[in-house]
Every structure is written in C-alpha cells, then in structure tokens.
Image (cartoon, rainbow, N blue to C red; front, side, top):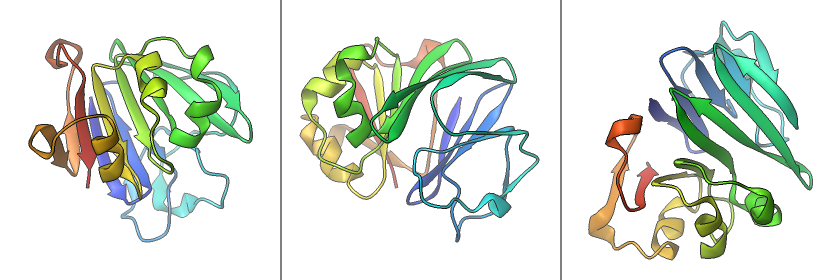
Length: 175
C-alpha cells in the first residue's frame, strides 16, 4: 500500500485493488482514483480527480474495489475504517478521533490529518503499528507521540505492506 501527500491537506491511498483521494483541493496535481473520501466539509475540488466512481462523505458502510470502508460519525465529522490489502487502516482528523476514542477498535495503521494537538490516549486506543501524520500540525503531532526527531520517517510517499509493519509503533510524517 502507498500513502502519498498530494498537497498539505490532501493524500492518496493506493492499494492493489483500489485508489482513494482524500480531500482533493486546488493546487494539487490531477490524479486518478476509484473514490474520493471527504474528511473536511469545505468545498473539495473534484476537478482534480479523474475516473472516480463514488464520493464517500459520511457515516455508513461502503465497498470500492474490494476495499471495505466503514464511516463512523463524530460530531460534524466522520472517521473511516478501511481494510486495504488485508491491513486495517483508520483514517480521520485528530479532532474527530478525540470524540469517539472509546468506540474505535485496534487498527494496524492510523492515517491522521493533524488539525489539533494529538492526545496520546487517542492513539493508544487505536494501537497502530504505524501512525502516518499529515496536515498543518503533523510535525508537532509526531513529537507529542514521544518520538525523537531521528526516529520519525519523513517523506512525500510512504509504502508498506502487512508483513513490513514495525513491531512497535512507528511514526511517519508526510511532508
């Protein structure tokens, strides 16, 4: 699976069977995707995505390209649980996670739009083996998780599979 930063607040999640663009916005390059997932309610720039079949925007059960997606309502926002290439992935904004930390099950990977300071208790509830952070406060979020600068992976694209996940929680910042 690949997670690529397209712009400060937009990412692409690409598995073997499907690709997703999260929060497409002006200024990012055009990309192909099977679906668009919206975390932010402000107007996305759908013209930046080609070939999408569906827009996922809210709670419910979805399936796109053999990827199962569950949306859980959190106040005004939605947090998503995806199963991509047999890996459980949690996708959401940090502010939305704080409201539903008690309802979240374990996930192997957490992809978080860091819009607020991360509370460690929220991350420990998810117990990810890999936390991928992006957004305005991603660097501060990595420090909050108790990782020193040398142990934080920084890249525009993170690639992993189920067999190559770290035993202890790793932190990556998309930048």
